[in-house]
Length: 132
Image (tube, rainbow, N blue to C red; front, side, top):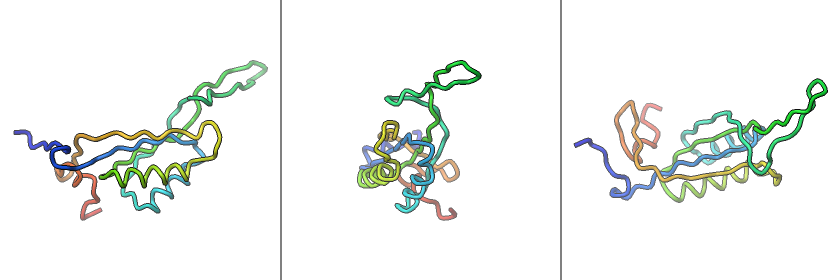
């Protein structure tokens, strides 16, 4: 037996939230998540394009299309649908400018989470540890 528990059988709801936002909204979103007391997040610099499509730039007299724009990607794990909604609302409020290119938020159901240090699984792996 592997020791793995199926989160759905245990009635646990683990959700991953990914948000792609404008670079200049990094601190606003980070502060909103901290105010909400979200315990952990991963932040990455990424490149992407959507409706915004990029822009054209003149470099030494030549035009270049810049199709991929710098963005910030937040990854957050929460333990219930209620926290999912609160987190989405906080990110949306902090990241919205009302212009094309504000970004996207996507959520995923998580089958399993494991805290490597202790071996805790499921929702327990998402909660802050006693020594954190």
